[in-house]
Image (cartoon, rainbow, N blue to C red):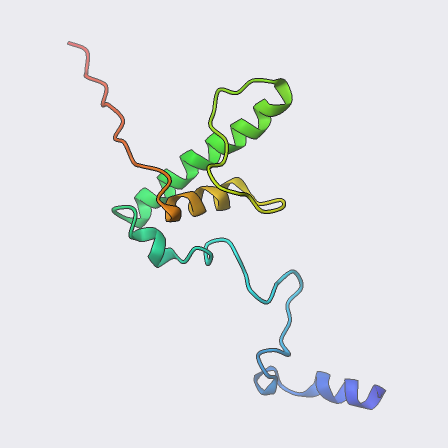
Length: 114
């Protein structure tokens, strides 16, 4: 058994099957930016830069909502869909965008003072 383990360690990485390669901390079906796929998210916004700003703002709102729960304040709207166990606010925001639960509204520009 020990010889087989040593033999496997000595084989080049290229000969290993994709299922044999493992990296600490990875999962078989990664989530995050791959779920929902970036192409699906870009159908809901004008550009990838708008997606970054839009999702970051929503993630901050969700994070503030969770912080306010402990204080008894409810100034922000919480997640609009069912959340998974220990799901990060940015992942929640991206799933909300993909589900079409949010709309983009342009912020009024401040007029320069005369």
